[in-house]
Length: 127
Image (cartoon, rainbow, N blue to C red; front, top):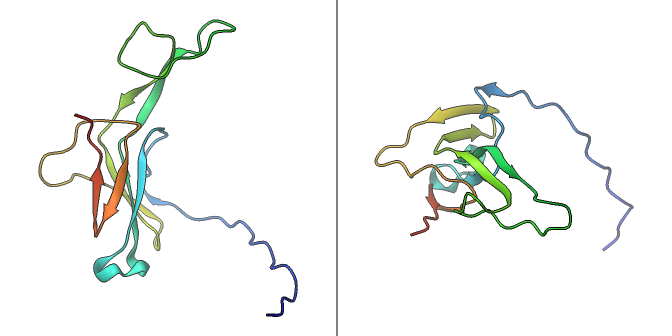
């Protein structure tokens, strides 16, 4: 196989965002789901949950920060303001839509896991 040289580096380009984009957050999931009949041209990105704020501090100098946990007195930074928002991003059009899923909504959460199963998103629930 002959290689003529390195491929050119793609140039960044602006991508117009339509609709109402979700606000800043962390600890959310963004799951790619193909369209009907696994049509990649109709793929969507499903954003679920996340935290909209941080609480706490890193502790005193020289201390090892503790992992976020249920104890309010533990040092460390915790995710706060967890949501159960669901936003869908249409990859082709660049449009965000906030949706209300049918059925019982999952409880607000952050730092969770999600996976695409067919055209559904399954969210990990800690019992």
